Image 1 (cartoon, rainbow, N blue to C red):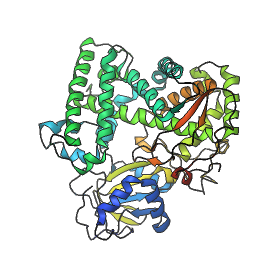
Image 2: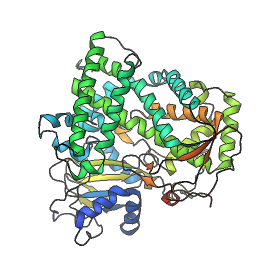
Image 3: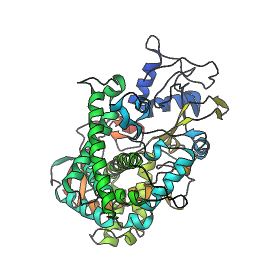
Image 4: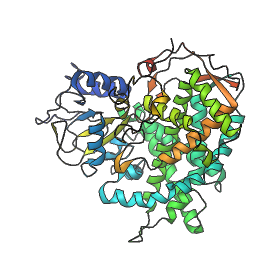
Length: 493
């Protein structure tokens, strides 16, 4: 979160830097509440705005020269940024830490950590996406149904009845187990669990304030610990990959399939480093997004009893208490609409970050090469001209309504639309269908519901709820919600 000298050609309007604290203070504000800060800026300056007047901020870009940070929203700007993939580049999830990849032998894992499809552009991106596509083909995704059902059943059976439970943590555990099983397979047993825990710790630490403020490889500092974790992760993953390569089998998991993948024309396979990058990125982008989508949807249903009742009627009439088959999921239109509306009103991934590879223009403003551009998915989903009463949770709006991919893009849009979107939706639907038939989750007003995070939006204090056997008493626990989530969605008093 350092600053650079502002370039004189910067014309995008924005607020003046804070006195004394200057641009770093604005970057800090944006990092701590990107939704609230961007909403205020859009109201003041319009749909294309600079984080600070004159530029000079660097939040995400790992490039040595970042002229500034631009925020935007709206279908036309979503289209421009997501369709012009030779102009708007992506970089690894590690963000600015990626620039330290050549600092020493210990920082070499940063070359692929959190990279995957996020870390490649142009022809390389197209080649890698083609290699990954078979692992996310619908037939392959559908084959994971049994594993998702088994894991979900296991987690649901362990929920304590009539006791407060942090549903956010439960959903995180559930999707973590699904990600571990589908990514690594069951053949590696406890080793897979250990590898997954290291992955999760590393990604959590990578996004921490301590690493951002003190990126120095000194014992006792978070960055030093992060490099230790990445080295351990590299060692374990390389052993796993080499073992699967030696077996030559497709064991049904994603790693096995990626090892087998070959370019149709050249026959080229992914290198070991590329495999490491893709597995880590798929893991990070996958389970956290699904966990938060589930948590927010269950919260919204707890505050909308009529919708919850209608959804349970649909689930019970089609499924009769059983887990859904892939075919039955097509017979649950209200479930589909509830999830789509939840991901509209409380978008789990609120931002789509890019960096311009060359000078370009956006909204009539010239953007120098190296400008970091953040498209606000959340704000785009709250445009009243597209979504009347945008803060209202209203699944019925999806009856006969099909916005373009640039108006509704919870999984991004264009050539970089999330490759795992189909798998995420399958997981979310199965979990919702099984959980709601078995239990009623009653919201407990113990904590304020505050949005938190940047790459994904999570409830800062978790989501405490009381777990009841399904008794249809949906009016219990409605109302009394405190916190800035009320700025995002209309809720009962």
